[in-house]
Image 1 (cartoon, rainbow over the protein chains, first blue to last red):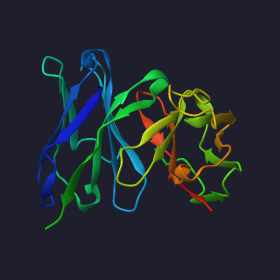
Image 2: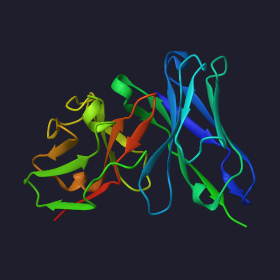
Image 3: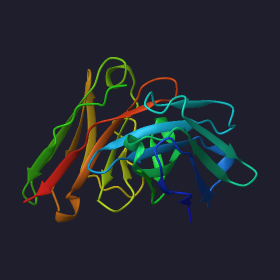
Length: 118
Length: 110
């Protein structure tokens, strides 16, 4: 069964850091690009970041560029999102997502909550 | 990276059809044939229902269809069923591996 399982969420103070992890299983992880998507409370979905299957290329939404870093370890089937200089507006449910055909977001994790508050 | 424009709400009775629009610019919707749509029931993971403007993943009913004209994409749900009540999001490729979502449309089945 294809599965993505996020971990590492929680409550953090403004200006703090947090690292999300995503464990992939049931598919050849190293063959797929991966993305992070978030949903703030009461808001819509927002694409956050993408990383190529090789891990050599990343891209970010303007709202997180320079603060968030996406990486992966293909030997462990793991995806990561390092979040620094966190702000209240980063409070959201964060989803780990597999990139599929034609830049679609084909497989989604259940999501993990990040709350930024003092 | 401005969000694509969707109507905040849409509704229809069981058996009817409803169409949800998604308007962007020539830098996203109008520039690529990489439009996807997602169904999101609150508390669950979003689900891909349309990709590459018109294609349906395996298992998605053919009641869901997509189209695009210029800078506007559309999702049509035919033969509405109660389980179709959910939030729907369009998403467009925007170049350099980036994606942009619409603001979402809450579909109510009356």
